Image 1 (cartoon, helix red, strand yellow):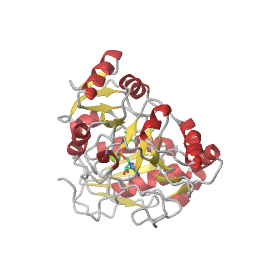
Image 2 (tube, rainbow, N blue to C red):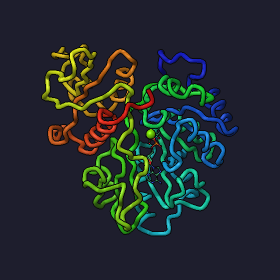
Image 3 (spheres, rainbow, N blue to C red):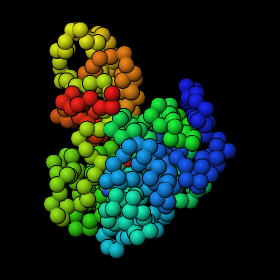
Image 4 (tube, rainbow, N blue to C red):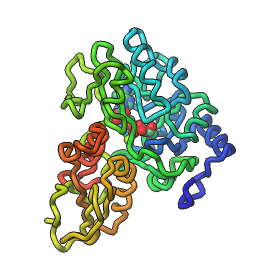
Amino acid sequence: MNPNASHPKILPATPESIRLASQALRDGKLIGLPTETVYGLAARGDQPESVAKIFAAKQRPSTNPLILHVGDPDAVHSLVAMDSDITRRRFEAASSLWPGPLTLVLPRSTSVLDCVTAGGNTVAVRVPAHLVALQLLREISLPIAAPSANVSNYISPTRPEHVIDGLADSVEWVLDGGICDVGLESTVLSIADPSNPPTILREGVLSATKLESVFGEIVLSAAINNMELTKPPSDAPAASPGLHRRHYSPRTPLRLVRESDHASSANSDLRVLRIRLRGPASSLPGYVDVWSLSADGDPLEIANRLYETLRRADSGQFDQIEIDQMNVEDWSESGNANLIAAISDRLHRASNQDDAPLGR
Ligand code: TXA
Ligand code: MG
């Protein structure tokens, strides 16, 4: 539990509040739901009116499909259409990683709502590995649509207060599941096309090596293999429509700088914060403050603290944020290349220096 969570809509995750949240979902309301990756903005996924509330609250374009969350891999079968042996075999293999930070994209069944899939012929499904989410999903026994519980293009939430910060008026309750273990959204993996290898559409904490050992076959990564998601060839797996370039951005201008840059080149009148990926948070010329995400340079710790840190940096005390780029080559010794790619991708999307300021 999180001792800092104090808002009347944040409920300690007792069996009674899980029942309350479950009833609110049944009644078509929105709930802030903890998962191991980030908090979700949950609604029942089988009712167009409830799903519409998600899009309205997040100001999310209706072209961006949602993930359906269930409490058990078996509950996926009614949501998908697996008419190929290859897809069935891949599903069985991949679901051994559930509950976990993995979202599978599969051909949809006719029972899935168009507003969930944004009219596409695939659906994204996930069994999250958070006790509170699992208890709620198993109690309610309905597919629950849940995007990250942030207003579109803002930073994803890793604590219950973050959900309240952006969406207090939209949610009935937020279940307090503490600080998210992973802190970065799930790996989105498409196994929708049996004639192509399983393909990572959005990088997360899972490594391709792990996925390949589970599937016993090669796994492609849209980011690492330089696949063009916005203009796929006609036989490519479904693109992930949510992967717009600008995303996860703070309102404060944020610029990526090289890890080796030790002085700010910003105008000296500005209050500039430097966020380092690794090492000590020692002061540097031109910065009013220096923070470090991980003294030891542990990518899991960097992922875990990234969104929380960006939100803190965006609280109005700085005119500009400069954050280290995560150059994949400089981090090749640090293990999981997919996690490095995931963090690097989120950093690029958070950087808004070249764009018009968002939502000021
Ligand atoms: O960790 C997570 O995945 C969190 C937690 C709450 O489960 N959810 C999350 O949802 O990040 P959202 O909506 O913020 O991101 C889902 C991503 C988007 O990029 C969306 O475009 C993509 O998954 N997606 C959803 N359905 C898809 C589909 N049928 N085909 C391809 N991509 C899909
Ligand atoms: Mg999101």
